[in-house]
Structure formats: C-alpha cells, structure tokens
Length: 403
Image 1 (cartoon, helix red, strand yellow):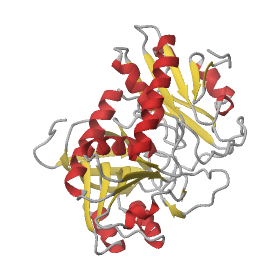
Image 2 (cartoon, rainbow, N blue to C red):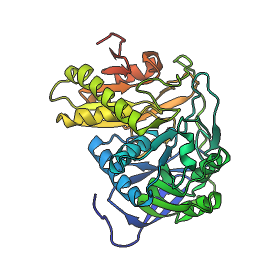
Image 3 (cartoon, helix red, strand yellow):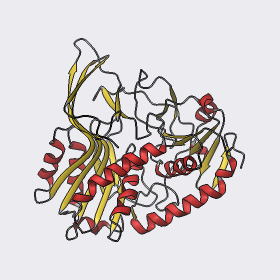
Image 4 (cartoon, helix red, strand yellow):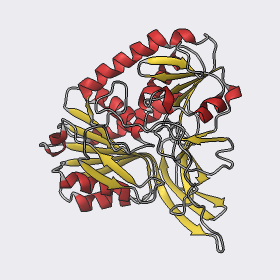
C-alpha cells in the first residue's frame, strides 16, 4: 500500500441525473473506486470498489492487501478485551469475514466472533434483531443470535462494524441501535470501510447511540461528497421483478462452507478455513490446466469461500480474478460496460447481475454457490457457456455432470 496523495483532491463526476463532487482528504493508495450510476431513485450514484470484487473482477492478491491494510488500522483501537465483528449483506459479508480473518491473526489469543447481517432466514430460527439500510435496493436486514452474543457487552469489549463504504453513518447507527436493544454495551467501537465519505459523521452518529463508548473510524480513503440533481431529469427506477428459474431456498442454520448466519468464533473459523483449503486442493486444483486463466465467481452473500479458492488458485501461479454476482442494480456505462442479468439464486423472483465478465476472456470459469447446483439458473449457465459449478460437496460441469 502506498500514500497516493499529499493534500486534498477534488473530483467531479457528471452523471445522467446530476453531478457528484468529491473531495478526498486522505487515501492509502490510488484507484480505490470508480463512480457509476445506480438504477435506484433513492440514490443515483454508486461508489464501485476496485478492490472488493463485487462489480469489477479483482486480483485476490489486491483484495488481500486492502484487507490487511484495514486490519492494521483497526489493531490500535481494539484494546485488550473480546472483539465482536459484524458486516453487512450482501456486499460486505466477504469483506467482513476477510477483515475478521486478518484481524484474528494480529490479535490472536483473545475471544473473537464474527456475525453478518443477512436477507435469508435459516430454517427454524427467528431474528435476534432487524435493521434497515434505507438507501439500498434491498432495505431490510436480519441478524441471528450467535452463541457468543454476550461478547459485545463484556468488560473492555470492542464492536467492529465493517462495510464497503459509508456516506452518512446511518447504516452503522441503525445496526448499533439494534444491538443496544439486545444488550450490547461495548467499551470501544471501530467503524471500518474501504471508503468513508461521511466527513466524520460516521463516528459522530455512533456516539449518539453509545455515548460512553470510544468510537473510531478507519478506512483506506476518507473525504466528502456533494450531489446536485440535474434539473428536469428523472431518477432511474429500480428494475422490475424477474420470473424465478431457481427453487425457493432456505439456508440451514449450520451448513458447512456456507455463510455463517448464526456467527462463527475465531477457533471455528480457523478450522473451517483449513477444511475448505483441503477441499480446494483435493477436488479442484487438479481439474485446472497449469497455465489456465481462471475466473472465480461468488454468488450473492456467498463470497468468502470463493475468495479463498481464488486466492489458493492464484498462489499456484495461474492468472486468477475474483468477482461475485449481486442484487445491486448498477447501470451499464463506462464503469460497467458488460452486464449479465439473470434470475436470482434463491427463487425470490428478483433480477441479479454479473458485471464486467466476458466469458471468452477466461479459460476456466468457476461458480461457487451455497444454494446447490439448481441455484444457478439456466440463463446464467448458458451465458457463461463453460466452466464448473462448485457446491460444498460436489463439483459439476455447467451441464450438471459430476467432475
């Protein structure tokens, strides 16, 4: 990571419905984001991360470096007590787990737990709390009680909240307020983002929820933004629904190699990561040509295990990139010139997208899913045209044949 600037920098981005003006005060490296248009009347613009792997395929090495830089910035603020880390569906679940993974290596030996928000209710469970992300395309989030729920109220506890970006801090404050209602009382709060456009507001609003907590915000870039709507323009509407091709899906409460919707502690995380690496080594690497260019695709909330697979494949010397499908309705344009649209993996009747992927550019395409082979629609498999679908227990061709 390098310091990409010595003073504030100003950028102006002219979009079809207005002008976004950015002032960047501090950044750890260059080229952390691009600005695209959203198909969402609540907010016309989208900060597209170049290191996250959600809209732009990313080298797993670059993603890991960004995560490690964030973890380094968190360490001075976590004290000596337990660490309770959370991140947001769908975009930041993988990022949160990666930060948890890196942070656990830096502060090993203390109680640590990770818990995501989710938009899917595990079988037999009811939400511990709910929260909202008002500017999102999918507003409602659920949180399910982990076994280590009391960790967030223990003496000298640190609550770490992770998201890809923040503009006002309201998403963080909504989740913090929900945690307060179920007894959380952290001594410290660390708010973690790749890009922070809140001009300090993110820490301020959290102090309003937990006035006794020491609140810090860390990011790889901080600045301010101003949006000016163009006169006479109409905000882009959200996309309409799409006929489901995949069966309705309900996650199991404790499925292996899946999103840990009921939380995971540091010890269990280490064990599952080792088991997953063994699965990738045994079942997948031998199927790839030594000089193959490989695209790894995560699906929806299921992004951490696919990223680990991409990282392992890259370590063998193969050119490897990672990206995930998304519900985020970003508009096509200079930042997203290529976009596939297909029915969602969960049978909800929603459109999903795969951005900036041209199948002909890759020798191998690996689609990882927690919803089973049937959760990858015929539309998506036909558009990709080649590769494998990897579930936690099997590897199949796009036609469904077992490897």
